[in-house]
Image (cartoon, rainbow, N blue to C red; front, top):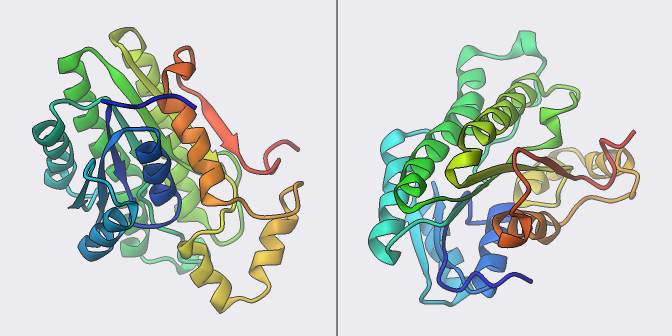
Length: 250
C-alpha cells in the first residue's frame, strides 16, 4: 500500500458509499483529507467516524462554483497545498424513460454529474498547477460506456464525464497532473439501497449482469481510486479503469 503521509487529498460525496470508502482508505494511508458532502451533518458525522485530526469536514454542493473553489481553498489553507482529489459526488437517474423526463430532472443530473465534475476539476487543477502537479481520480460509472434501461439522463452525464477525463488528461499530462477515471459497476451503496427498497428484484437483476455474480463493495472501488492517486500509478493517465465484476468485458 502506498504511503500518503504528508499529502492532502479532497474527496467529494464523501459522507457515505464510495466517497466515504475513498476517504477511509486515504486516511488509513496517512493522507490529510478534506471530506466534503452537500449534507453538512453527514459530512461531520463521517469525519467523526474516521477519528483523525487529519480530516476536515466541509459542506460542498459541487454544482456551485463557489463551493468547488471553497473546497480547494480550504485544503490549501488548512494543509498548505493540494496533492490529489477524488471526486465521487453524484446523483442517480430518475428511472424514467426519456420522453417522461422533465427538463429540470435532466438538468439536475447534468448539474451534479457533469458540471459538478468540471467545476471541481477546474479548481483542483488550478491549485495543482501552482505547486507542480498532482493526481485527480474522478469516480464515473460503467454507464459512461454502456447504456441501461430508464437511465438516459444518467448515462449521458457519465459519458460526458468520461469525455472530460480523457480530454483533460491529455491537456495536463506534461504539466505534472495525472487525471483518471474509475468506472464502478453496480455497487452496494446507500444510494442503491434506496432503489432496492422500492424494487425487491432489482438487486438480483443487477447482480446477474455482472459475471462475478454479485454487486461491488465500496472499499473495492476505493482501492482502485487509491492506487490511481498513488505514485505507483505514475504512468497511468486518461484511464477509464473499470471496477465492475466483468460487466463491460463482454
